[in-house]
Length: 433
Ligand code: SF4
Image (cartoon, rainbow, N blue to C red; front, side, top):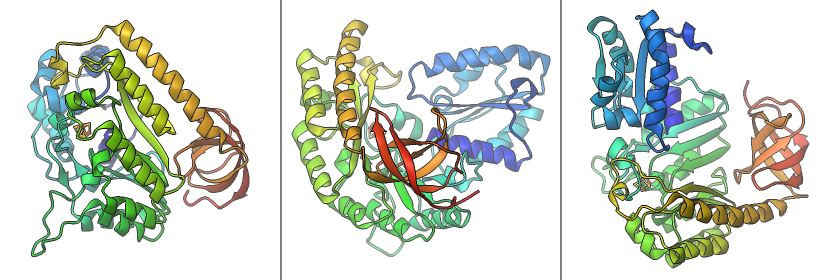
């Protein structure tokens, strides 16, 4: 969501005549788009702001903007601690960025941390990083209250965008050459629950949205993030299975394999239920890749709780897992819990989990060797050649020089825990560029 917001910030500034620069000294405006999910986000922000202070003193016309979740959470405290910041713009106030910027030039420091989204960021102009892919926000906020999570505090309750508006945006993107869209929401698969359609008892739910986006000509791949396991209802699974453009990949965040910890986290499922849902999804969509999030060292987590996480990870056989050592986020309920664990205990558990998961990931990747997969090229790879992704979201490196947006048939020649190496068998012309 932050990347998406960054594209919107860049789009608004471009529309106002600004151009990007690599040199901070040349900048007329510097925007920090902050993410409160990241550890130590505030320390890093104030460190960065500190570096800019001498520049601001030399050049008072430089505008310094703090946007995003930390701006929403800390509001006026930012300008108290760093009075050289010109604009603080919260997550709901992005559409007013240029007005705030211009007002700061004549009236001094500005702040807008309103608590309600009126204009979806997707409705703003964007300067996208790549031409073939676009983020499309379908909802903002979340109605859950997971005790470790800052999102409800900084993004507010869920608000869904009208189905017609989402579709119009996807159609416009397809006309511009976009071939892959990622539908975005903090809890994307509860899309529509808060929307009432005038004169109709029906709500446009996530399954309808998937089917409708699947009809858009020119779009070849549909992804979505971030879902909640509880909201993969049978209609969503059926819509995924029947929509040929919806990629065979789900992110299915487990967080913990212990029922006791899940209760403390205020997650609405339990381990066996989670595994049952996963089984049903794999049965409906054979070959689907499953990724997850796992938190190690949640307050009060015992050795036995952790063994249960290892057990579920072994049984679920995730393609990849985003594994985190718990660290308190100020403002969350879990941060108030008294049984915070010592760092060495958390580290030792984390290392065991990583070792287990790396082994599973490698086994799954090795099953791909010798197969031919469809790859959409994303850009230059870190290993030379180009890098792209399969429909199952596996990173593939391929020798050669190809435009981003090119579709390739690739034969996989070797496997690593986090990427595959392949050779192009068939190449389609670049979709864009
Ligand atoms: S469902 Fe996701 S976004 Fe919502 S509170 Fe839980 S972790 Fe945060």
